[in-house]
Length: 226
Image 1 (cartoon, rainbow, N blue to C red):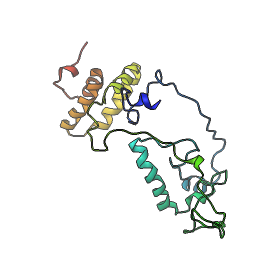
Image 2: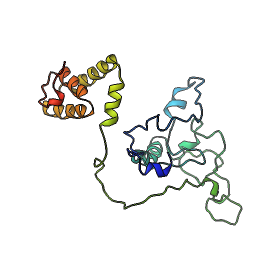
Image 3: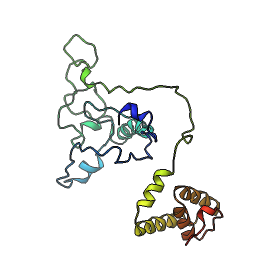
Image 4: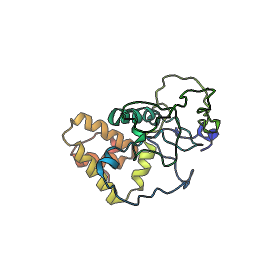
């Protein structure tokens, strides 16, 4: 989505609770992930695996999605706590293509550790230097950085209702049954508040959950219809 369109798009383009309609922005195939074998050793290749959204290819940047921004910090931090500061040198996490960084020392460092080359920049010893080709893609911003009510001017029900209306009767029945099963036992006052949210997405959605729970909701929009 071009930046100019993002500024005027009818939904917040970086709100992870929303979906960009494919009719507006069709999916673009960028590659195929092939899983061609099962792990040979569960601990070595599964327990020690450390996935992180920080790992991207040159030319890409990080979107201002708030959830992604939090994960950029929390995922590597969790891996350092779980596996140690050198988790990226483990075979399951090590890049197939050599990656040169300033990372040195730390518990369980078992490779050449950069030898005697300098781990700072700038330097006059032929050591590593910044490569401008790999700078993060710039992102333009405007307005004030402040605390805002994200609900103002934000449609939290339109897409949920559209998805519900796309479902087949069997899919709707399964969804409502699953929700009702998980909501049983919670205070009725809270259940009614949640049912109101379903009803704002689609009256039949709220009505279905209310009936599955055996709860009467006085809102006319959620009343049973024939």
